[in-house]
Image (cartoon, rainbow, N blue to C red):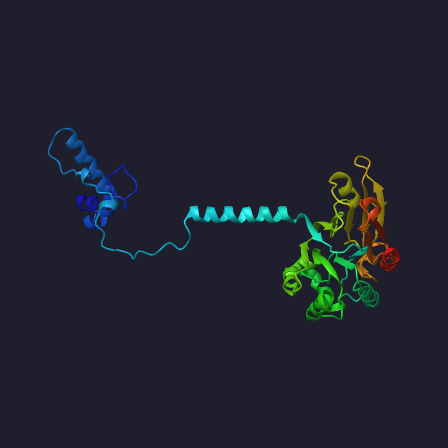
Length: 356
């Protein structure tokens, strides 16, 4: 027992160490633990009475940390940063994220012209869907490639089906590979004057937004779901716009209810634009508190003959595939400088009519 005490095994009543010296001695002594404990109890009683005894010297216990070890391991370097270094890195990352978010809040986009422009908001294209009106989309692409005509993609460029919805690929002629070719055409080869793209729910599935960002060699603005922007003209006119694939809030009586809700509750923009629901609408009012006039627009998109809409009883409208505003930077205030349109061709004609 004393030999094991010196090797770091504990006396009775203590924990830790390499284990119990008494228990460890059982095999060496070839007795039962019960017999050994009864013996220790008798020797303890004798010691208490001052009689001769063979009670082990429990003070011989040496903690394992002070026992010379036979086995020595190599000194392996720690496989990670120290916790303080990790905390420093996380702090720097968080600081960068906060600054990035702050910079994206009403980020300015300079439009270096004094002439009227069209800013079009292209509704959900769903380029690879069999119901996409490719003919109309190509006609609009020509309009959107003209001088002083700019465009924002409101999102859902392709179906990009995922999960149980992947079964729907059997109902469309275009493969995923072809869908990505269509995105490349839309982004580059269509010659559309893009100001920016939003990514809707279909775009974000299966890292689709990351793939589109890698295609973005022009470096146009791309944001997930929503963007708060401010178009800045040399004349000093600033036109704040809040674009979102969709706004929270629905009403059967108003297709742009969510947009209006954002305008009334959170304010800040002159134009509020959404898509997503494959329907369209437009609304303009003067804010009763600020006196500012704002425009709420929803773009319908190019997906027609929608089976999902059919089986759910949703109406399928025909107009408003792309909505737009004409901005005349020669006018000093947004109330009179911004004119909304639900017809892209009319918007372009109006821009041409008021240009010098």
